[in-house]
Image (cartoon, rainbow, N blue to C red; front, side, top):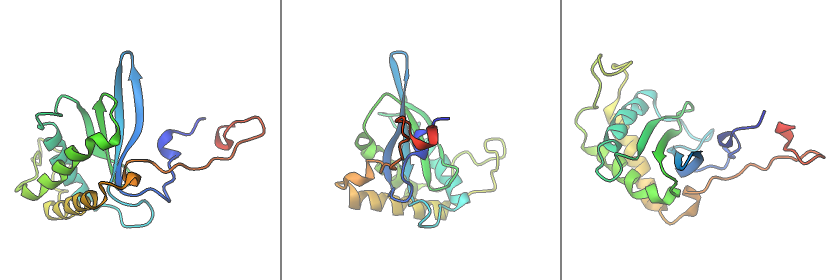
Length: 174
């Protein structure tokens, strides 16, 4: 079985940033999955679960209301490892094209007074939210983006070297 692209990324070298995870062609259309990584995997603590849940609600609401981008947004949700989020958009843009949008989205968290969609009718676990911690993580990531805007590493996945077998197949796919 072929290893999926996100498992071929060297998680020992990835830094927080905005990465193209995959581009899917659907006929004449493209859909792109972006890896919005807030934490260094396996090297620093993951995002608190309740804060992650709050960030999911706040940023999804922001993205789906942004006048320029709302019609492009398909999905915003957390990674299972709690080190970041996936953003799925219509089209095929480089990671750098999302810098401004995500910078504004994460900066907007500071002004939020109440997490949207947290009534029992709107949320699968409405009691698990932490707005104060969400604000802290959002500021940390937005500040990091500011400091690293010119650093190409925040836009380009580090690749894992994979061994080739004698017949030219990758070791794990042979």
